[in-house]
Length: 463
Image (cartoon, rainbow, N blue to C red; front, side):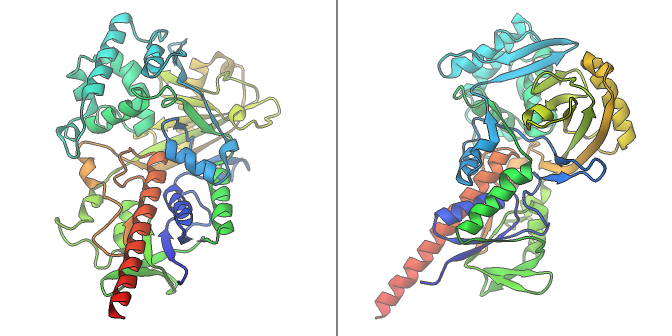
């Protein structure tokens, strides 16, 4: 039997995960990436101003990201991430430090116990939060239900939440997880997030962080795995269109005119880029692909500051009532020798009001905020400063967005979809990207095996 080959457009996490899963299913992947490096929207690079390798943004995952962790293990990179054993988040508010720290209790009780010592919400507020979590636990989510037509904030206020609990608890988790304000994300996604994160195993909300640069973590390791197992990766390969034969997708055509053939094609690129490859484009409001065109994106801004001395004594910390949001001690997380200094990364989610600010404006704002929140920064000198803006970092999970997320199989034979924006049941996360790649690979393998079985059966009948 000829070697089965599948073409994957896009070398981000979704494409790499699809390739790894195809290999496990006995299918040879050919991954095509238009940039000179892998990783998609999660990569590291050498900053031209500082000469230092940095991540394009701070990426974290949680214990519930099971398929992402399986992918990391499969490519041999488990020793390059660190995972906490349970929820433990330092939270700073007006100079007062408290923690959401789970006790060593069985099951869901461990996560709920994190509220006991959390001082940024009063006793009445904690009762409200528990009532909200109970309501979430009892809520049954259905596709395209009313929960996708209202915002999570409106749903919370209808379930006894107030300004204190929303600002100091719910949005503390929603903003970095969904990259948008709690006032605009859908109730469906917010409810789903808390069902997974806090109302499951004690390990579900535990935070995991990369210990090396993102390109080294999954770009280099995935390339080694794929090539070692007979797959192929081609970078700096831009795709112009899909190739079809008799209405079936049989490969892709590059901008250089070359054709790369396969038994199927998986698109693992953003929805807008995917739509541009379709033969004839989408065909009106009733077309299968049209809903994906309505997906919107949200920005993230990462601010990198190098100090001549340590100013942050936590590995990471959330800051309430401050533009800082979340601050990460990159020097400690990456075990870097900083010659007595420290590299901190400020991660700004839903950064609508920061994305158009100049580098100097952002330096003025956030250097002052660091001094206001962290006294050690007042005596420290900034030795380097740079920013990374990701204007289309994630897709938005606003009300109505569920219908825009397409499944892996499409009506176009031989053409499949992957990407965190597809219908994975997860928001725009690394877990969603990996899940989408796995799901697409499973669909491809199932359909190829079925087609081969039908062909073999037909040949046997003809004989």
